[in-house]
Length: 387
Ligand SMILES: Cc1cc2nc3c(=O)[nH]c(=O)nc-3n(C[C@H](O)[C@H](O)[C@H](O)COP(=O)(O)OP(=O)(O)OC[C@H]3O[C@@H](n4cnc5c(N)ncnc54)[C@H](O)[C@@H]3O)c2cc1C
Image 1 (cartoon, rainbow, N blue to C red):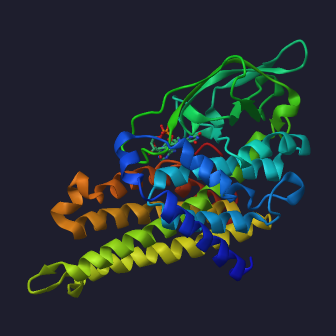
Image 2 (spheres, protein in one colour):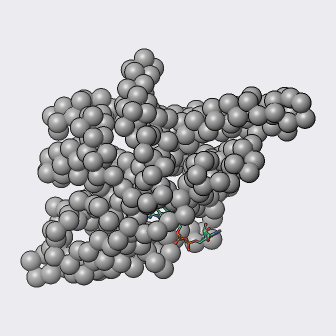
Image 3 (cartoon, rainbow, N blue to C red):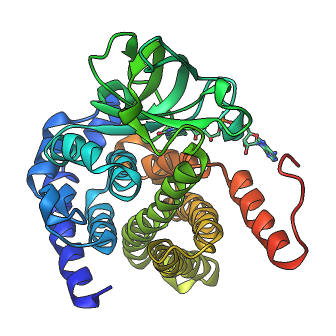
């Protein structure tokens, strides 16, 4: 990582998000809407070309450029829903860059860099935590292509998606059968559901996907048959450290609001900031910011170099930052007192948005499970997979 380049890219997208994304974020939250024009503007800004090699139409930088751009985007946007939609899209792009074939990259990345929307779909109505328990499955047709059927649930970007990576299985392959399928809008048998009405992150379109014998040829698999789980976990690791980056930047924004209010509001003849119980809240916000960012960078370094610790480190970031953003937004409401609960003031939105950070990208309990599994590996050997 080149710190100067990182800072430059971050600043570029703080300014972009501040100018274009923040101004109407509260309106979009109220109406629960995703802004296509804004998405196109983000694409036109070159956001998606960062981290993509030049021969594929990108700017030629690495994964750190993309992460720097996210740090800036989340700092300026004042809109965690929009930023997490971008994170879901980035997950698909990074998966293609790391694990896709050259043919897949050449076919899909130009569209994904210039306004199309991507998604990754694992969760089903029967449960999201037990990834290996998914039911969506494929059989071969006489031509050797796969016919994929099943239902995905609660998928970021699904209502507006152009390209989706579907996590499915090929039962005929035997016990190791989890496989990643690329599907595209307009394919027969593929239906995207409506934008769901959510508590928070309402600017991110979330919905179901139905697959009824969708035909997927072998060259549309990411990895081979049965090679999906490792690649999915790579994608989840990237996703989880991005959550850490988003939290660090967004909570920085919350800390500014909290500090400003604490200095202006008087209680017992002094600014709120003079009271130690209030100071403690600001200090905890600062800890979330610094710890989330630093740990996300450590996890990214591990992921980028292929170190086995990346998965556990990314779970540590995800867990710490999700707890941190819920705590920070709750304390922000507390510092603002009755105004904090008033819808028109815009403070309560941060708390509604924060709740899903403990669920999306793998719940906090699943992060603990993953961290514990790695601790056991390190010190005592393995526990049975399904404990
Ligand atoms: C905003 C948002 C965006 C999302 N985007 C996507 C997306 O793009 N793609 C996608 O595939 N999914 C997405 N999801 C779904 C998300 O991944 C799942 O909600 C999550 O994995 C949990 O699955 P579940 O909701 O089915 O809960 P369940 O798996 O039913 O779990 C319910 C509760 O039980 C706990 N639990 C389960 N098993 C255990 C255990 N062994 N030990 C202890 N506790 C346990 C869980 O932690 C959870 O608290 C999104 C969710 C949200 C909220």
